[in-house]
Amino acid sequence: MQTICKETYRLHPSTPLNVPRVSNEECEVNGFYIPRNTRLSVNIWAIGRDPKVWENPLEFNPERFLSGKNEKIDPNGNYFELIPFGAGRRICVGYRMAIVVVEHILGTLLHSFDWKLPSGVEINMEEAFGLTLQKAVPLSTMISPRLVPSVYA
Image (cartoon, rainbow, N blue to C red; front, side, top):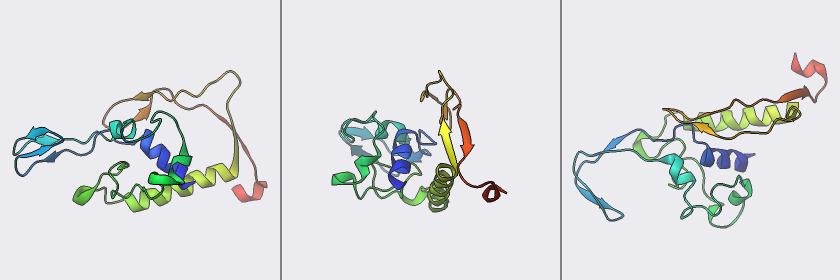
């Protein structure tokens, strides 16, 4: 479950651009000169799709977090390959709660219901860009209860 959530954070971060930062002093990053007081935004969306960072970056592959160099990566802001909630002093204050809630809700929905696509419908993962990232085409599914009816009351 956690690897599915990590892979989703990587490919579909809720905010594609991190909150802007301002440089305190001039510096150089990867050969680029950054003057003092420059406003910078980290492109979280691009990091998640960068082939220099991820093998087969456009492929949804939660197994990439089960072994190898990606095994220890988590969304807590310590690994810059995966920073869906930001990092450093300005990381989202609710990131710990968000991780728990997302995993709990996803687990509950998967455990409690059978999920099917309507006939002739394919999943469209295109995104509509804005301040937050949303699906361009809303997901359309058919769900049916898996458990005894008294559980849902």
